[in-house]
Image 1 (cartoon, one colour):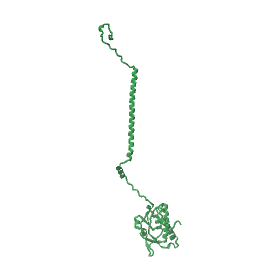
Image 2 (spheres, helix red, strand yellow; image 1 turned 90 degrees about the vertical axis):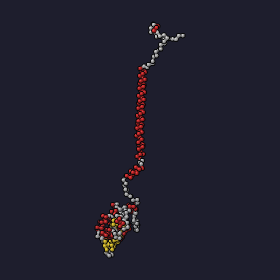
Image 3 (cartoon, helix red, strand yellow; image 1 turned 180 degrees about the horizontal axis):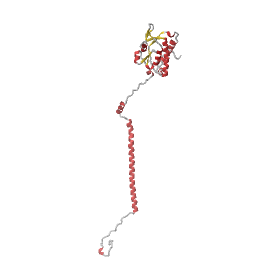
Image 4 (cartoon, one colour; image 1 turned 60 degrees about the vertical axis):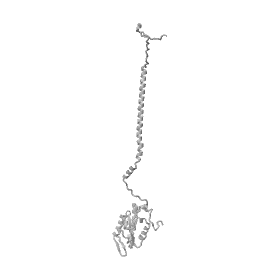
Length: 267
């Protein structure tokens, strides 16, 4: 059976024909319509925008995360650094700080009591003062100079170192307080008792420090019986007054450390 031939007859002349040469059937390419092409282009554009926006958002989130981490990190590490200090630097800083001397505070009532020693040399070294109206060396905070000078100025006092032989003492000698004993008239002794009572009231009202003799019940009885209540008057000569050395403290101390009395103050 002869093979099938395809001819394109363009003329009637057979000489113009290529015999036995097959002619290929032209292929027709598939084409999209304009609406389809437009849809595809829009889809691609949307996809590209979506990818770009997603990338930008991801970059922003990552940047914020890194920024927050960088801010939070110094806060967490700064606190220990502020608390902890190298021992060498700390010791250096403490050495450079000015040292403030804090005065020692008394640890008990007894530590608040001031003394005058046992002789006039020790008394002077301790800063004590001799009070002629009390015949006592006493710490300066307990010396009421205003009251003492008032009483000394009121009377023309005469002092004796030896009343039997008439040996007197000058006012300057009495004020030095270097004698062991002195003698005086009874009128001075009465004024001494009144002076002691007034001295106590002034100290309490002004919250001054006081000597223990002012809160001694024996001293009050002595002034009552030996001086103020004596029937022989002011002419008694030879009242003996030895030089003494007393102590000084606030009343709050003495009320818990009262001097021992022979007479009872409750009977």
